[in-house]
Image 1 (tube, rainbow, N blue to C red):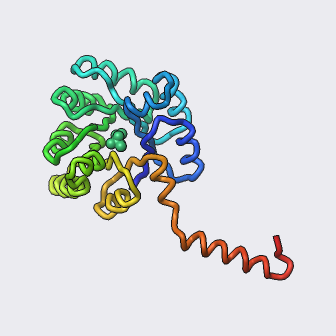
Image 2: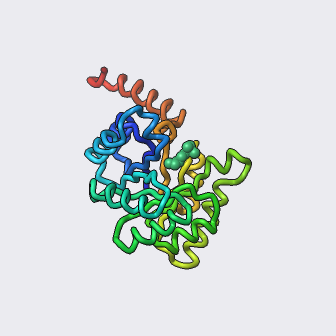
Length: 217
Ligand code: G3P
């Protein structure tokens, strides 16, 4: 399973890159707004750091506007994936991008039928939002299970990108279900490292190592 970082914060991207486990980045308008920086500056810096797929979202909601933004964004780098909303216009833009060879990430997916539409339109990635479904007492991970099954039934090539992840358990469940990608907030990616037995074990190894003659310090 690929790990994408769900952020527009360049500091977080640099830290995750240093861990050596980062495959790509996803952004959205809210994440960009959180940085307080201009989109042009943020995306240029992200693209200078990340060689894997970087999702940049369109903000025009009409088909012509989406397509003009899609071409503009894609021209910024070969790693750019155009993020499109799961609306009628977004799905039409997805089909046009697919025909033009532009990779896409269809976002704001909350049902398996929506995921089916995105796959039929040739989406590179579908982003079902598990956390936001959990927020309204629905089972976000059940949606992932359904989409993975449906895509396998028909050999769709669209990759399931689990979005709106909120805890390490979401990542574990996504991996168990065979999702292709999880996009993960920095704090959650950081939590994936943690285990008290790792800390305790390391502490003991270092304590014992200090007892080995000639190895103190
Ligand atoms: O990038 C889309 C998604 O991951 C947003 O997550 O936490 O705002 O629901 P969240």
